[in-house]
Every structure is written in C-alpha cells, then in structure tokens.
Length: 202
Image 1: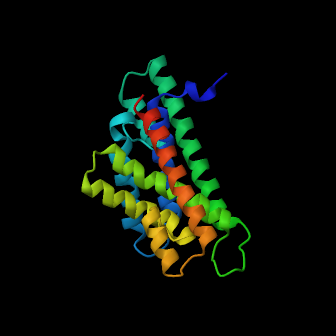
Image 2 (image 1 turned 30 degrees about the horizontal axis):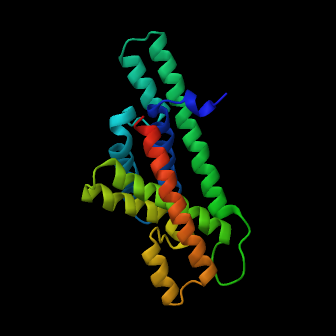
Image 3 (image 1 turned 90 degrees about the vertical axis):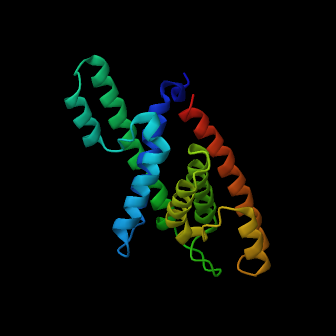
C-alpha cells in the first residue's frame, strides 16, 4: 500500500509548515529570536495558509474543532492535522539533530560533509517553496531566503544557489568536492520542491 497517497494536500501542508516553523524556533538562538521565529511563522502562513489554514499547532486545530461543528468528519480532520503537526515536529528535531548532533570533522569545516549537504537540500526546499508558492512575491521570496539561511546557513553556509557555490569555490572558501556536492544538493532540493509543491496543490 502506498501510504503517501493517504495524505491529502492539507496534510502535506501541515507537515511542511510545522517543520519550517519549528526548525525556525530551534535555530532562533537568543539574538533576535522573536523576529526569527515570527518570520518563520509568517513564511509558513504564506506558503501553506491557503491549503490547510496554516494551523501548525495542535492547540490551534483543537480550537477550530471546538468552534465548529463537532461531527465525525471534523474529528477525523483534527486527528489528521494533529498527527501531521507532530510529524513535522519530529522531522524538525531529526533534521536539527542531524545538523548539530553528528561528530564533526577536523578538515577546516565546522560541520561534516553529510550535515552540510543535507542543509543545502533542506535550505533550498524552504527557499524555493517560498518562490513557487506565491508567484514571485518579493516579500515572500526574501522571507523564505531569510528563514532558509537561518536554518541551514550555520551548517553549510546557506549557499542555496549554484552561482553562490561557484563564487565561493573561486574565492577558495570551499574545495571542488564540496562545491560539486553542494550544487548536486541544490538541484536535488529543486526537484524535491517540485514534488512537494505538486503534493500541496494536487
């Protein structure tokens, strides 16, 4: 059985939105923390709000359930939303642990090769979802880059763009192997973005 087909666009929206929002919280730190987590929530509301309502919080979903008609369909929606939001939270924890919990190498980079590659994929998806989801609205595009860089920048440098990676290679900031891997990861991120966008708008 294809379990991914059990999920509706709203479910993917709640998983993605909660993942980005909670990842923003985990990476907010102490400096400008409120701004960073507010920006993450704003971006998620722009990207998934029209699809699922942008709850990203089981308490919010419960509030809407209690406000509306409390029939079986509403109960099912509440359970699916809460489950997807918890899955988004688990995903945020796993990705953050991968970024910051693996042993670090000693070759001049602050994070391992694998961590940096995953960061480039994740950051590219977040950035590109902002681009695809709002028809190029410059505020949303800028906000998505800000959040993507906040989440992935401390791990990989947050290139999210082959041109940036190539420039950093020319400047001697990264080596050829890492540059090639980053570009592949950015292209993988672009492909994943298209797949996620298709699921959200099925």
